[in-house]
Image 1 (cartoon, rainbow, N blue to C red):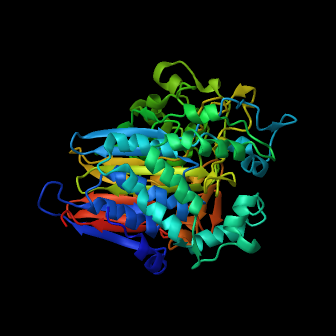
Image 2 (tube, rainbow, N blue to C red):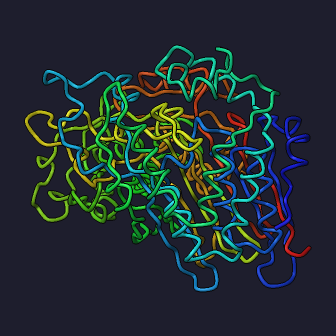
Image 3 (cartoon, helix red, strand yellow):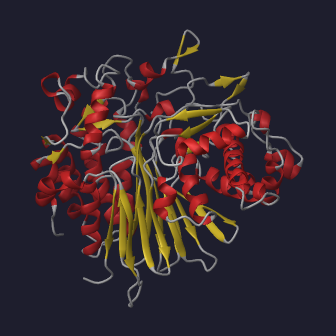
Length: 579
């Protein structure tokens, strides 16, 4: 594979402008006519992914190569020490695959592990503890997805990240900003290994400076040579366990936990919504909420004035409120909890759920699909969970030159994960995505901790198909619990409001979870949306900015259209059908 890393080190700082306008590659004439496209969270990673596509690689190949670079250049968001969900579309067989590389709880985990004197541990203490580290899934996902779909040699996919780690990358303004904000918060600037790497001489890395990472290069070289076994067994596994078991609040992760990890292959969730078929990851992902929001939006608009902005915005807000309430209550690891996923998407349930729309000043409560569909209530099985999740996440949308596609969302949970370091990368704090309060109102919480269990995730990579079954849209976002709202914005914006991909991404974010409606006012149109919703009676919380990182690719008759979120450092690159 041709390597572009040397030139990137010199050239990419100038290309880190956060806003990326729509990129369109026109249709070609042979085979899949549209060429390929990548929409990735950092210019280094986007360039590497595009080069993989130029060399004839599968979308999965490009995702692996890009994510290995992302783990180096934006370690606050994802990396080898975290996990990911990958949705893969194979055009030749018209099949969709869902690969779950989510972290798992160690065998020593237990339901009350985050309780102190019967009360939930504070988030910062839990976040920065060894207790917070789940078994990483990313490297196993690399290997499993490449074996199933890869076209290029696996070592070649990791070579650009290895070279960049050895030579050094240009520190971005976003990375510098995170390091400044978190200095003295948590343990990133205190733990010896992370302090030396991120705060040399006691000062955070500066934008424009060059940072190498020989340990990361060595880790990737081991994985390139020996596969995932080099990560989950041997010296590196021992280093990971030692980092987790160090104080304060050491965790229980053991070598046997690492050796036992495997990627879960799941059935994608797909449902017809209007003239589209929307497909996403099943639980423990929150993808079901995307199908619910779009379906509820259509039902709430059925009796409304489609030309009215007030009706459109209130329908979007209320669809979110209802779907979030159900997601919070029911979604967890389906291997441990009977998640009523099919019921939540059922047309009859959505019809009934839309009629439970609450007044603007009200608060949506979870519905009961068992009672609606079968006359057998299920709502009392679980306590009402509202677990929070941090925004240490990234998203990649990729379509290759053969028409295959990947929607991949990856994470270390909160920024910089647990601040624990091994092999040149950060370890996740994914265990804090479990409910730290195992029982609420005397009832067990569906998303409580258990050995081997995968925590509920707000990550919801999505693909949409048109009425002919053709790929229409690839989308997803980071952003903690707000991911559900961010991704839904692009689905409603493109599929219902007729916006371009960039118009949908740029639009002010609205997050309607719980009793308030959060509106992003620091972007064009945000203040007007906030005022409109306030006039309608909604309790609005104005926020200057939001942490979305949406990356979207649309398939139109004219070709591929892509967008990257101006709130981050993403880049869209079109790859022609022929070289």
